Image 1 (cartoon, rainbow, N blue to C red):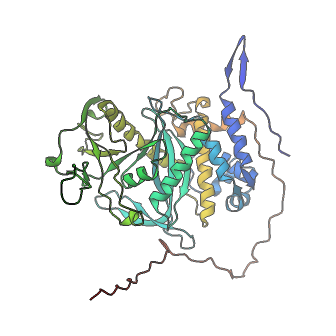
Image 2 (image 1 turned 60 degrees about the vertical axis):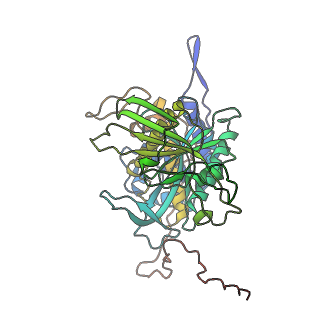
Image 3 (image 1 turned 90 degrees about the horizontal axis):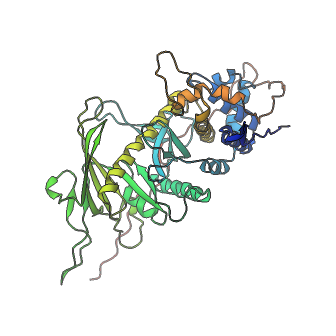
Length: 485
């Protein structure tokens, strides 16, 4: 029987009292345990082993050697392959935790896709071709793997912390924009239910990198209190509003062209701002309001009923004096779904976009320290469970920030309190865990199974799966109608 130990919400010192920072962490750990409906003790101890292992995770079986994992390596794999996790309840628990906000009180969410590459796993199903950037010029590749879409709340200032709220695996036949908008819609709904956003609060800002259809995302999420901010390629062509219709002819739908690569098509900006920074020098921004892309009935808009919509926004051009490492700076083009933006908002928006790169630090922590892509898992369902175990471990590190000590290496610089990196918080999590109750039950001695008899062959080999989309496309052309004579 598991005994739940309650922790007081305040500690009394003399005549005063103060809030105990452990309460939020203990409550979340207990709720996480309640979300485990099968192999709950094994999955919970696997998460604790991931948090308390001081070294980067390179193989999954090494976690069974930590003192926090009181079961054998067979129980570790059994919990990962056969365990059951209530993901919907876990999402609500993560969304109910305190969220970081920007300086003006807005919630800023970064959305990005990170792949779990599995090029040497032909027996793993639902693999797709993941776009991976190479180190050299034009060295991008498409490698089989499982792409995951993450949503994370961003903090203010330079930091490697983010509050990861959701993770969804994209299947080969999924439309990236449709899955992303559905994921964002559910995340925003959970934030509203948790009371993080109420009527009258500023809109939530969604930050994307290049590669997303920003106009389609803004169109599909037009009924939500969100604004879309993302980067566009430097060869895009947008249009100003259409001029008034003439006396004859069809009314125009698009105005003059605005070519990012042709300064001759740029009129005077509607707003501009100069900002002095200590990292990039002078940042110069110029914004043009009410620009929209030309949308036609093809691609993702092929099934759109009626005429294509006009999705207006603000184009922002950002230039800086220099980049870290003496790299030659190039202009950055941003698109914001609000068509009327002033100079103060422009200066705030490009800084919000730069905070988007904090999620790259989270991906690096997931892969290089927590070993998100280290296990050689065959089933995609087990990969989903391991992904959420890593996400929950990162959430516990975020809640343990005020409790951690700076256990730095001799060659590392001291860090001020509450400014420790996630890796440094993980070093001291074993001490933090010792002060909290453990909801997992003690292991019971069991006899291992006999396994396959020696010398016998495996008569049920694993099935091999193809990579990429499997939807059949009808390539037959429709018969032409007979023209009347």
